[in-house]
Length: 504
Image (tube, rainbow, N blue to C red; front, side):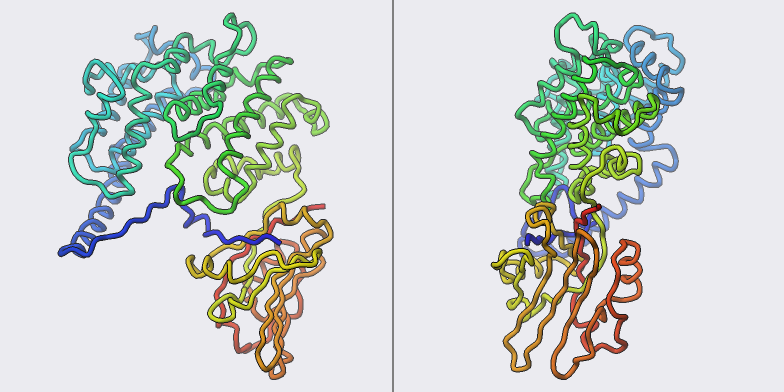
């Protein structure tokens, strides 16, 4: 049986940076002032946003200019960015682009600058041609180059390790986005042609060209992040999903296969994010995955396609793999918007999987000396798979709100197995403790802790009323009711356990 520990999604961070503070005079005051400065900066940014100020508000106004009148108007405005200067609202759009770029100045707070950089990348890739509006403000130096922009935006003071790494990453990404490059030239050449699949004279469509740039590369590379974001912008266009035919189905299959490969490269089936992993543009990939699923959803409904009809489509199998990967816990942490689409009722019906994630809380006695006596058994096997002492150090390194996850592979390895956690001690009074769940027919879930003095203190006495309700919501029958006044009820840490439960 495979069991791993991961933090709750709220504490699982995409980027986890740890550094040692030197024991120098004034360190405590520096930390206090740094914390107070971060709090003040956060409050100021929120107030500015409510007053219509700040980079987020400027980006919202830009988005409303394009998206406020529907899909057809959006595509018309994108196509006319460089050719129709008489378009209503174009002057206001230029002012908002200038304001957004002004928030990248060195006099602004670090978080404000970072937010501004991310906003620039978002709108410049979502609406091809808009990057010229930023360059024409003459705020950035000419001639425009990646190195020149990075030097221009270099921070004038020291940043914390966390801010410094994100700042360097997003500055390079923004510089690559605004500078002339092959990808920008491609998508800006004829925006009306970007979503078109058939009738392409060059052999490959714009979508296929962007997919080529993703091959064997990672999101840590700026060019890959830009290709992902440009591709997301194209898939957000209504005209892309109005197409049909074998060529369209083949291109949609390629899109699904490429993003599926990217998810697998991120080890999306694993239960924890590697703390040493490089910072990546996960928001960009989340936007692409969200646009892909939203488009499939709208296309399926508009064509009134049933599940059996969907399964005959050339792209169905690859789309099913993408949706299945997005249902894993790690996908929920990295790609929350895409994950929300993958678990909707429609997608559960169109792309059914033999498992789903159910979350409920159990109490596992894994502290102190007892932790050394734990062993994990596979009820369908004949040998110990994982020693408890290998896991005990991981348990002590996370908070009491840790999460235990039984992997999908562990459930599929032994179809008749019922994973369990078993504790054996060599005390004078022999005691056993067992927690088990059958994920296949859900016949029972029981917990038992028994010895000579407390023979009646057994059953589910470690579970409170709130936990009992969650068990019932998950369709898991409980054992005997809790025993009032159980002596060890609060002596164990509560560990939130998430099990993959197979659905018949």
